[in-house]
Image (cartoon, rainbow, N blue to C red; front, side, top):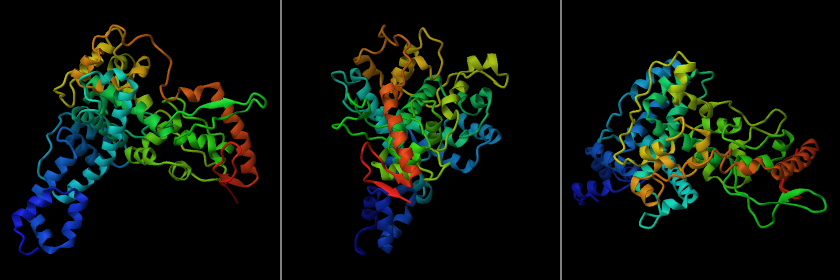
Amino acid sequence: MDRFPLELLQRTLVHLDFKSLRNATLSCRRIFYAFRSIETLIAGEILLRQIDYDVLPEAILVNKSWSLGEPSVRKGLEFAKNLECREPAPTKWNLADALPLARFHKKVNYLAIQAARDALQKQPRLLAMGEPDAPTREEICRFERALYRFQLFCNVVGRLSPVRGGELHNMFFKHFATWENEQLACIHEHLVRVVSKRKRARYVMDSHSKETSLAANTELLAAFNFLVESDVTWGYLNVLYIATGSTDYAQEVLAQGIEKICRLSRATGYTRWHALLSRGEERGCEPLSLPGFLNNAFGGANPSLLLEFDESVEELALDQPFYSDPDPGPATMYEWMQRNRDGLVADPGLRIHRVWAFPFWNYSRLEAAGLLEDPKLPGLWIESYPGLDEFREPIRHSFLENMRRKRAEIWNAGGYGHYMFHDSSEIKWR
């Protein structure tokens, strides 16, 4: 190693990721010296390979917002000065500053890819002939920026309640174009689905007993709603489904931010979900709930309504995007969907279209799919919570009530843990 040219060694280090770089520098004094002599160049190049330059300013803002601590209106308005202009990201970094951004971005990227692929599946027309069957780099970057805005909202506004719509507008929403705020609405509803359920399960009713149960050939891969149906203590406590985006249970989980959501999304099986969501096995250990949070906050994204009802609004948003997207697809699609509507962010009537993330796609994809200027869009207003409607069906609630009674009996007898229909093998006893 002592004979290996220093310049070649440095060129090699540039191609590592941060974990491998750290291991390499700790393994050999010469490698450590090679790195430290041009640390900012190596760390900067690795960081820009992991976080796209078009996303890095948002990552820096979120990293800066961690220092805010407990949110307050005063701190939120002060931090909002950072949103008045999107500052370009530096290209040179030291390792200590780059590492936290890279670590958090792995979670953002994971959820962005998941959200983008899920949206493509919900709207097959987006996979029109000649268009890529996977999200492009630009499209993934839009999902990443929206996820960073979500975390920024968690850090800047968080659990503040009550907060007037005008204050929310000034602290956060006015710094983004309406289509950017609509992207946040798409991400919000996607994340509610992530924490509540992952795959649809079929239910059947026994013709003799009239009891409802899971069909034998289906598997429920869920998180929160799986525990609602199978955890003994939650059955005793009568915990209800996350059945709409406004459910307080869902808003509480979302308020814990991307770190928690990503862990839930990656987790599989009762044991890991229970560890992430349960507060204990005693009376009074219901899951925490949070009224409002982001679901109610979108009123602050609609200044035309706020001017009528809330005198704390300082000014109308100029509708200038925080990120000047060179592709007109997102803004154009948003304008088309709103052409005969009130122009409201998070319009309930567009919920069935937010499931396919309509303000995220490249113009070329939307044009090839025939979605731009499609006279049938957005269509009639439909009362629907895509991905959650099944939790509002009577047959589902019949099943839940049957399971709840049985689990309450088990809890009162001293049991806790995982119980599925006629399966007590995983129950533990006090």
